[in-house]
Image (cartoon, rainbow, N blue to C red; front, side):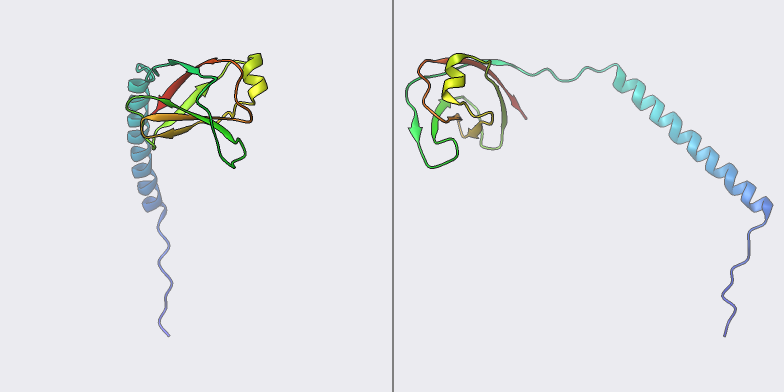
Length: 129
């Protein structure tokens, strides 16, 4: 049977390896520091918040958990877009039981509720792309 033991590195070799590792760590640290400095001067993208009126008419029904829905035309909207809808608390929104999650479809935004609202509801939205 052959001897499979590998030789133990000498202290000088370990010191040399340590020095090489420290140089690489220093280079990486400098690179990260430069990147963080560059990013700290940048601002996050601003979202375009748009006004939205959820109508009291034009609602349809299906058998989902929130059975009432209305489609609101939004030019350029796709089924892959994520739309964040903010509905401020109001008596009409509360009475309708507006769902907190909207559905994006090609060219339209679907809002769901438990009941058809008795009055138009003012809201805002923005698209996350």
